[in-house]
Length: 79
Image (cartoon, rainbow, N blue to C red; front, side, top):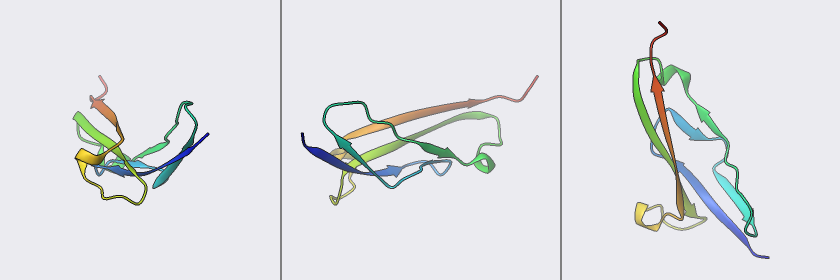
């Protein structure tokens, strides 16, 4: 069973992975914990962001990403 290592990079200032790298052994599911910066999510609107995973130690170019996690945040004012 091999191990894969990835660097995690967010493209949105309000979304950040809790760890800068993640390791995966085998074919099982992979969990990635994220942090939302509440100060940057105060205005109503649709927020989008991605966390990109790159092979650890390689250049961080979108065309070289191994996978991406897409997050949509639809914030509306309370009624």
